[in-house]
Length: 160
Length: 360
Image (cartoon, rainbow over all chains, first blue to last red; front, side):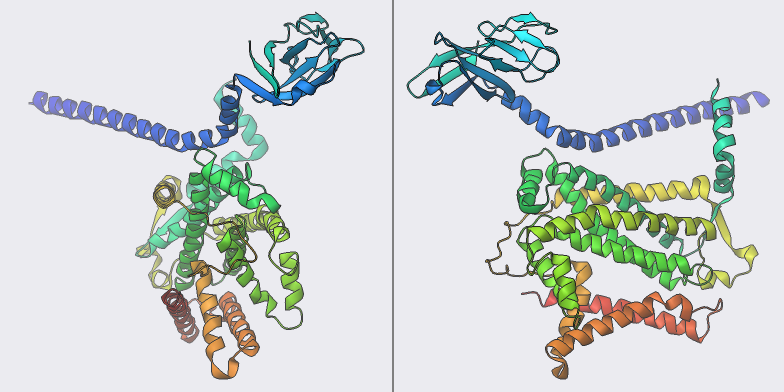
C-alpha cells in the first residue's frame, strides 16, 4: 500500500529539486548578464582616452614642418603618436630620429650635444646618439630608430 | 582559522551580532497603504545612482571656461558618455519625483507626529538640498537652456528687498551668469551640497531605524491583535530590492530611449530660445509668482515680493505641520492638516499644468 504513494512523492520531490535548481541557475545567469550589461558601458566610458591613445599610436609617419632648418648639433622633441620622440641634427650633418622613452622605466631622455650622448636623468642610463644602442646604466634595450627623409618643406619621420 | 573564528573575532570588537539581532527583530507593518513605504527606499537608491554616475561624469567634466566643451566631449566623443550623462539627468528628475511622493505619503499618513518630528524636518531639509542640487547641476553643461534657467532662477533671490541683489551677485560670482558662476556652482554641486546632504541623510535613516515605520491613523485605530507585520529580514528587504531593480530598469529605459540633449553653447548676446521654461519641479513656484504678478495692485516689484512672501509662508507652514497636528486621534486639527495637504497638492498640480499650458 505504501509503495506507490512514496514513489509519487519521490518523483515529485526530484522534480521540485530540478525545477529549483534550474530556477537558481537561470536567476544566476540573468544576474550575471544584467551586471555585465551595466559594467560594459562603464568600462568603455572609462577606457575611452586609452582607446584614443591606441588609435594615435597606430600612426606610421609624422611630418615635421620646417624641421629641415634645424641647426647642426641640436635636437627637436616631437610626438610620434602619443609617445615623445627626438630628431637630432648631428654636427656631421647626419639626421637621426629615435624614440625618447627610456627602455628602463619610461622617463623621457635628453640629447646632450657637449657629451654627444643621450642621457636619462632618472637612473643615469646612457644611449648612443647615432644608433640608439644602450651604452651604460640600467637600460635593458636600445632606443628604437625611425627612418628620416629630409625634404624642401620639412622632415618626414616614419617607422623603420 | 575558520570563517567562524574570524566572525567571532570581528563580532567581539564591532558587535555585529547586536546588529544582526536588531535586523532579525525589525518588522514592517502591512496594510492597505504599505505601497508607500517603498518610496523612501527608492529615493535612497536614486541618490546612490546619482553619486555613482556623478563620479563618472567628474572623470571628464571641466568646470569654468571649458565647461561646455567638456560636456560636448562626454556626450559625443567618449564611449557611452551620452548614456551616463543621460542617466544622471534622468535620475535627477526621478529622484525629486520619488522624494515628493515620499513626502506626500508621509504627510497624508500623518507619519510626522510624535516621535517622528525630526524625521519630517530632516526630510524637508533633504528635499530642499535636493532641489539646490538640481538647480546647480542644471547650469553645469553651460548650454543655452542652462544659461537662461540660471539667469531667471537667480532673479528670485534678487527680488528680496535691500539684500537681494547682493545675494544674487554672490551666487553668480558677478552681475551676470558667466564662467565664474559655473565654477562656483560646480563647487556647490560636488563638494558643499554632498557634505551637508550625507550627514543629514544618515541622521534621517538612523531615525527611521530608531522609530520604525509609522502606521496611518486608520491602522492605529485597530486593536493591536488585528495589525499585521512582516519581518524586515528578509521579506521586506527583498521587496525593497525588487523596487530598486524596477527603478533601475525604468531609469535605463528612459536614459537610453530618450537621451538627454545638449543645446548650443551659451552666448550672452543671443536672445532666449523659444519655449524656454523651468524644470517641472520649479514650474509651480514660477507660475505662482507669475500669477501673483498679474494681480492688478501687485504688478511689478510689489507682486514679486508678495509672491515670495506667500510662497515662503506656505513652505514654513508645511514644515511646521508636526507642531500643529500633534494628537494621535483624528480631531479638528488633523482634519485641517489633511485639507491643507490637499490644497497644497491641488495648488502644485494646477499651477504646474497652467505653467506648461502657457509655454510659448
